[in-house]
Image 1 (spheres, one colour):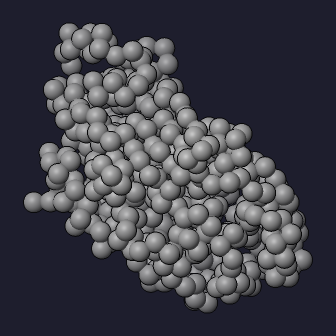
Image 2 (cartoon, helix red, strand yellow):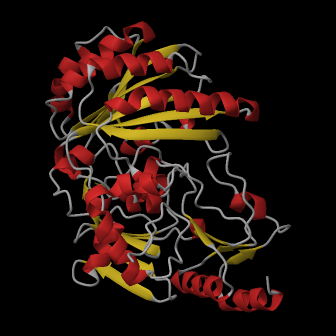
Amino acid sequence: MNPSAIEALKKQIRGELLQPGDSGYDDARSIYNAMIDRRPAVIVQPAGTEDVAAVVRFAREQDLPLSIRGGGHSVSGNAACDGGVMLDMSSMKGIQIDAASRTATADAGLTLGDYDKATTAQNFVSPMGIVSKTGIAGLTLGGGMGWLMGKYGLACDNLIGAEVVTAEGKTVKASEEENADLLWGLRGGGGNFGVVTKFQYRLHPLEPMLGGLLIHPVEKAPELLRFYRDVTQDLPDELIIYAAMLTAPDGNPVSAMVVAHMGDPAKGEKALEKIRAFGPPVADTVAVVPFVQHQSMFDDAYPRGQFHYWKSGFMNTVTDEAIDALVEQFHRRATPLTHFVLEHMHGAATRVPQTATAFPHRVASYNLGAFSIWDNAKDEDASRKWVAGFWQAIKPHLSGGVYVNYLGQEGADRVREAYGPVYDRLAALKKKYDPTNFFRLNQNIPPAA
C-alpha cells in the first residue's frame, strides 16, 4: 500500500486511522464471531460523514476491498477484511430525537443498547432486535426482527430516511420524497448500495414491557413445542413469543418460551393466562421490566469472542414431524452453548405487502435459528458436523426463504433465497447505485447484467 496515499488520507479525515502495530488496532479489527480473524491494512474510525466519503474514495483509488463494521455482531464476518480498508463506524454515536415529529436520527455506530437508552429516556421506542450489543445499522439493513415486530413491524419498516455515501464517494439522502428507490432497497437489502451514515426512524410511545422466560424440563420439549405452535396461531399484536431448547446456567438442558408484551400490563397478564396454562414451569421470570432490561436479556448468551456457526430458515408451520426432528437434533448438540430458537412473526410485520420493502418474508411464520456456539477451538469440527446433521434433518420441513441477518458465508443461492421475489429489483438497484460492485463484502447482490 502506498505510504504517501495513507498520509494523504490521514490529513483528510478528523477520525482515527489505525494500522497493524498501532495501539487499538487489534481491538478494532476483532468482531463478534471468533471464527473470523482478519487483518485489514488500514482501519479508519470516522468522525463523520465527510470522513466516510474520503475513505470510500481512497479505497476505490487504491483498488482495495472495503469492509464496514457497525456493531460487528454479524455471524458472517463481513465486517472485517484481509489486506483492505475497514470502516469502523463505532466512533459515530450521535442521536437527535424530535419529540414533535416522533422521529430519531441516529448515527450508524450506535448499538441497540445505545439507541434504546436515548429513546426511552424521552419515553419513545423503535422496533429493533433482541440483543442490545447488536449494531442498529446491520440489523436495520437486513430487516430487523425483534420484540416489537407484532405491534410496530420490523426495524426496516420504521426506517423513514437515511444518509448514504455512494460508491462514488458522494453523499445522498434517501427518503420517500428523495431517492425513494434507494430507501426501498435499504429496507432489508443489506449493505449493497452504500455506506449508511445516518438512519432516521419513526418513534412510538414507550409503554410498559411485560417479559421474561417460562422454563420447563427438557423432557417436556415435544409437548411444549406443540403447545407453542398451537397457541401462536392467535396472538394479539402486542405479544411476541419465542420457543427454544437450550442449556440453563446450571448446566441442565431445558425447553423454554420467551414472552414480550408491550402495552397495558393487565391486558398482558390476561393474554399470558393461556401461555402459563402449560406447566407448571420450573421457573417463571415474567414481570414488568424496563424495556432496556428486556432488550438486553440475551446479551450474556451471545458474548463477543466465542465461535459461531449458524443455519436458519423459515417455517410456515411447525409440524409434529418437524418437532420430533428438532428435539432429536438438540440432544445431539456438540457443546452446551448450542441451541435452537423459533421466532414467531405475526401482526404488523406480516401486514406489509411482500414487495413493499426489500424484506419479502411477510407471512405469519417461524424463523428457525440453529446456533452452534463453542468457546474452545478444538470443538470446531464437532460443532460444524452438528450443524450439518441438524440442517439435513430439518431442511425438508422448511418453507423456503432465509433471514439475511442470520446468514453466514453460504453462497449466492442462499442470498437469492433471502430475497426471493424482490431479488431482481435489488439487482437492478445495485446496477444503478453500485454498477462495479464496489460494495461486495456483504451478503452480496451483484449488479444486474
